[in-house]
Picture 1: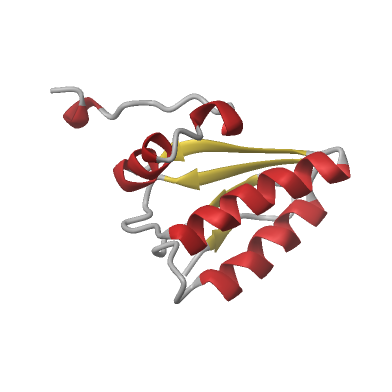
Picture 2: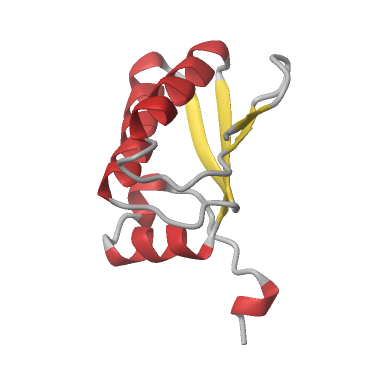
Amino acid sequence: MPNRNSKSSNRLAIAEDMTIYNAMAQKQLLIDALSTHDLLELDLSAVGEIDTAGFQLLVLVKREAVRLGKTASIVAHSQCVQEVVDFLDMAAHFGDPILIQPQEAR
């Protein structure tokens, strides 16, 4: 289940897979979080799987943030999220730094 921190916080950790099976619930969670904060930080470090539905949610959040004059950024990427962003050549679109975890740097 996604972990939504207190209302004063602007960091949202997604702990489930970002797949078509979770997309509707995650979409509502992300839109609600964006409507509550001017700056939304997404922690995706616990995401074990992401498919095109999950990736579309990330694009939607970025687009909605721009439309509303807010900021949404990914502050932590799991390996699978990083792989999808790289595969689709979307790192520049998101503009968020991708930190390589120490065990992945080998």
